[in-house]
Image 1 (cartoon, rainbow over the protein chains, first blue to last red):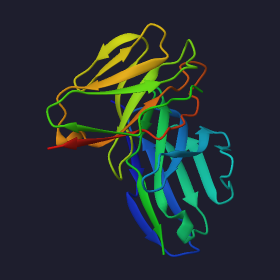
Image 2 (cartoon, helix red, strand yellow; image 1 turned 90 degrees about the horizontal axis):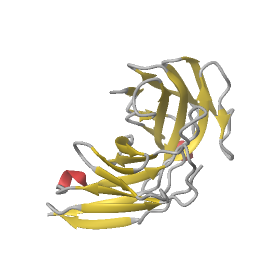
Image 3 (cartoon, helix red, strand yellow; image 1 turned 180 degrees about the vertical axis):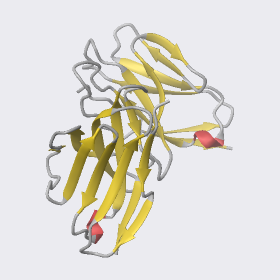
Image 4 (tube, rainbow over the protein chains, first blue to last red; image 1 turned 135 degrees about the vertical axis):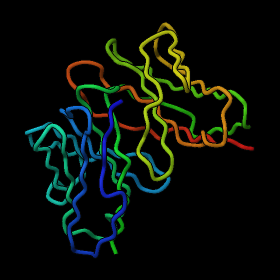
Length: 115
Length: 112
C-alpha cells in the first residue's frame, strides 16, 4: 500500500531557530500534499495544501512566512518552521495524495518542542 | 466539502462490536466516505472507504444507507488495542484532491 515517510519523528529546538520537517511518498507520486498541526487532545488542523511545483495555499490564520512549505518534487515536501517559538510546539503531520493508495496517506507525525 | 458529525466519545468492553455513526448531510454525488484511526502521537491510519451499501475488509465494515447522508463504521470484537480516535471524512472524489478537514472525531475507549 501507499507509504508516507515523515522525519524527524521528534525534534527539540531552541527558541529563534528554524526546523525542517520532511515528508516523502515512498511508492507513489504525491501530486498534492497537506500539512496539519495537532495540539494535545484536539483534532488535526489543516495548515496548508501544496501541489507539486506550485506555491502552497495556506489556511486562514497560518503565517506563510513562518511556515515555509516546499513541494519541489512528486515525492518530497518539506515544512520549515522559521524562528520557532514555544507556542509553535505541536504535533505536525503531513498527508500525501496522488497515484496509488486510497487517496490520502498520512505520515507518522513530528513532535516539535521549542524550548 | 461535506461537513461531518460524530459522537465525541464511546466506551465499549473488550470483545463487543462497536458501531460509530457519522452524519454527512450535504454529501455530494461524487463523494466517497473514508474512515481513519489515530493513536496518540501517530498520524491517522486508513481503515475503510466506501460509496454506498456495505464495504467490508479485514478490520472493519462500513454501512452506508441509500441516501448516503450517514455512514456507520462497525468494528467487530474490539480489543484494547482498538482504543483510539476515529475520524469520518468525506473528501471530494473528483476534480483532483481537495483539502481534507478533520472534525473532532470519536474517541473510543475499550475497557477490559
